[in-house]
Amino acid sequence: MNKGESSWLQASLIKNPNIETIINEHLQELLDLIRSKYISHGTEIKPVDLARKIQYFLLDSISAISLGKAFGNLKSDTDIDGCIKAIEEALALWATSLALGIGWLPQVPLIGWLFLPSLKDKEGFGKFMSKCFSYVDKRAASVTDKDTDMLASFIRNGVVGDDLRSEALIFMTVGPVNPLGAISGTILHIITNPRVYTKLQNEIDSAVRDGKAPPARGGLISSTQAKQLPYLQATIRESMRICPPVDGLFAREVPPGGDTVVVDGKPMFLPGGTSIARSAVAMYRDKAIFGDDADYYRPERWFPQDADKLAEMTSVIETVYNRGKSQCLGKAIAEVEIGKTIFELLRNFELTLVKPARPWKRVNVLGLFIISDMWVKVTERTASD
Image (cartoon, rainbow, N blue to C red; front, side):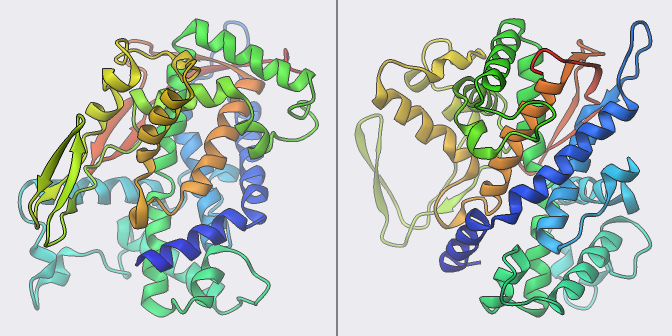
């Protein structure tokens, strides 16, 4: 996808009035699922893998946004057709093949297809591809000029056939993975820091009392309202800084003529053809930018006295979505999902880790994170009613 295609898709996603409606529908299903099956009472503990349930929510949301129909994982409380398992296994296999230096095998003429998933497969990523493509084909056959969803935008801009299928598959593969790291990471850092947890819950309660968020039975908080809650946004930024949901290198090649950049205030010439990449950990824990306590989780750092310092920190942390023509196409969707989900989970429930010594399993595959086994105890919370 070139820069022009990226721009019109980003604009379409940002302006699409149905995105938040779709996310609301499935976020409510997530809340209802937890409330109906996983509320602990007294000595009766019903632990829930919160990361997995959030992933159901993300996959249902992105399938409805991208393909026009949700997969239905939340309603069934299962990984329907093993789609999540297929995505995780495919990413892990791809990472392993690259690490072993055999990533080129699928490109070998005549025999390369043997190393690729097939639409005829009865399970795994091939079955997932087949399911996605069938949704794409059905949606493509019924698109009208009034439709504002992602596939409609692609089609109106000339993306059809296999190209349309491929673009939709990218959304469906990455869409349930990237926001999961941000949401799960933020929740984990909040509930393991009692001071932060209490302060954020106070902001949530105050927002409800002051009419800055709807009452518990008055609907879900809007994305616009969530963005206006400063401590909520600070906890999200700080969590993505300490625990980046995407840790890829995002390598770039310097143009043939070379380029000059400024490093630590000094100009540095980069020869043409040089491959340069980022280190998220080094950037996000740079003490010159984030302070001497950059290794520690402290949301209050996002309220500096100096506006220029805030602008500098914000500019750095926003690279989590990449920049330019390679900026994450799902950024607009992820930002809506992250703020709303964290607010509503902490507004409705009290969350406690069941296994604090090992709060989750987090595996890096190609800079993306597969997260599982985030077992929590959930109890009802009514303080914000």
